[in-house]
Length: 293
Picture 1 (cartoon, rainbow, N blue to C red):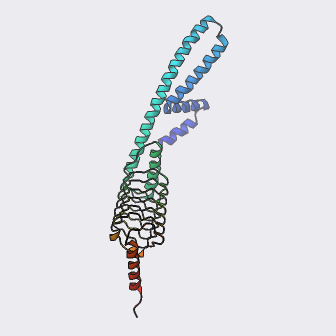
Picture 2: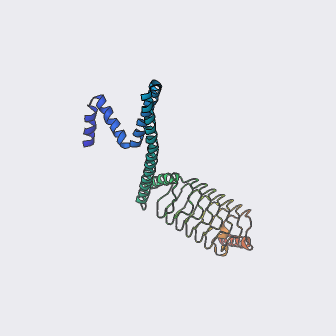
Picture 3: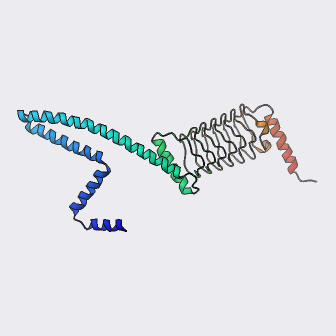
């Protein structure tokens, strides 16, 4: 209420008064910019004096001294400007980190969108993000971002866009990635222990040496994915699309669940016994589903 009254009183003041107040506020907000403007004005005055009084000995001596002083001011101005910008950047980054930490545990979509914006700003500032655990990041757009070795444990990323994201070494243990779009994402050496990847799009994704122990890949799309060296211990492959996937050197596939109910058409480099087990389980499930009599 008091701010509204203050603005109304200011509007009733003369135009020149309002202009002075506006200039004062701008100067307080950016003193370095004001200093640069003053320096430019002084430089213009010096050039005019040079052109008008350059032939006078007295004025020549005065102008020489003035030029030296102006050069000193210019050097100090550049230094002050650089320090001010560095300080402003540090304060801005610190504020981003504080805001991001405040949103941890907030389980509303507004928090997800705000967190996403701050993550992108921090990356543009050249900051390295390492901890995004226990956060709501559902339905946000994180496409193509560099989030290598980030901790996403226990975070909710359902239906999040992570297309072509760089996630090498990231930890998605117990994370909710249901319906997430990870198409062509780099998931090399990621940890996905007990991760929920139901109906996730992992088409053409790179999952080399990924640890998928206990992950739920029900209805997930891994067509054309690179699973070289991946750990499939206790992975649920119910209705998983693996057409054209590269299974070179996959580990612990013997304990994977529902292999017979996955689509393995045209798979590449499957280990010995893998295809035979898949066919056997598929035939067994078909026999079980046949009606008696």
